[in-house]
Length: 520
Image 1 (tube, rainbow, N blue to C red):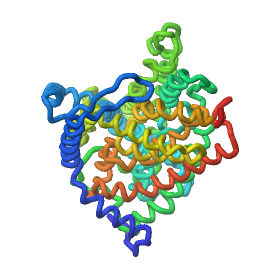
Image 2 (image 1 turned 135 degrees about the vertical axis):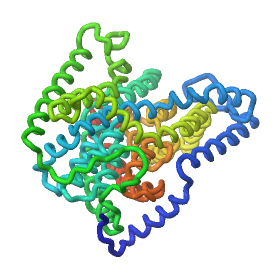
Image 3 (image 1 turned 180 degrees about the vertical axis):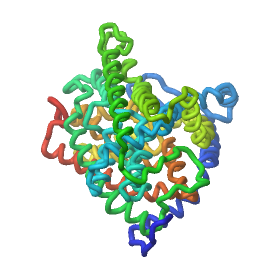
Image 4 (image 1 turned 90 degrees about the horizontal axis):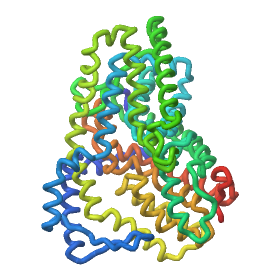
């Protein structure tokens, strides 16, 4: 079934042109093969030219390493398997999908969605999905796998366009990844990097902690929720309807992320009872995880007995998400009869992984490209060169902060790991802005603006490929250009919202967090 079409607006015609141009980009597998070849040649030329890179704060000068050299060929032929297996999103995607597949097969997902949203006003749904997507960063990368298909289910059940829920939730989760109303592992990671640099300064300012940006993060989360909800309601969903994008999944659709269809929000008495028992199981599991984390001598603590800046607890996000999905799913499935026999559990997990086959194939070539990008040091060179170029402009006022955010925005298209990029940029800009009178925590807050909005546009974000597979279940011909054109309004509006908020905090000198302000 397809929705009716009508004449596109001027904005939709522009986005349509971007989509057509973007869809001329080769398929992701071929795209990354081409990028690998370009990087191989470029790195070799830079190596032969003797290009070096020195990360500020480090006395060691490193040469760019070329792929088309004896060292490069030797590196690649001996690490090709490790490059694939150690590609971080690969493990996250597969492990999370095992649990998600089990939760879907048991019926827990659909029952939970129906129960949670059965009484919610239809107009509120885009804002609820946006808020959940943004604050879902507490689940780390898992949010980009779990929330979008759930949002599609909910939108379909209340008669809204499921693709609007799917893409809107991914936009919220990706472009709002740097903020949340709760403290996340990312806050701890950023704070640890910032404080390690600030501690070397003569005037280090106020010590940076995981709550140094907390007030700012709350405001950003709420603002972005409103912006994202409006974009889903006023831009994305009307465009999908006018263009006649199907609301039903194609029978022969290929790609990862099977999305369960929920046509109504009614929940039977047996489902309600099973859902209650599953909720009790989830609560007991959560309490057990908390006890495991806080008990004396906990294996979740670091060597100093704490949790910050690094600890097994902060690295256990995927384990916790999987556990919190699996235990209630098994309980629910046993009570409703969907998982009566043990053999049904691995079968459900296997079905989910089969759907991920295209992503696993793509992860092979993407893992090689990312590994080469890191090994050649071209990524580090780009970041340091960009930072040096901005520093040479000798900006001293708020325009320096704007330039810094713009640089982070552009680099985020190439270096999708926020911690890796912040490690390099913090070494340059925390001391630089300290000399200009800015607190390290404020520089970190400004970095968050750049390290978010463009996350959903770059093909180097591996979860883009996952959501493309989900989209192709409705639009088999969709390509990267389709995603770029539909995510572009979110990127632009999120970036403007981030900058407006940052400007407001700077002008009014509002507290970023407890005891933290913009200026030293």
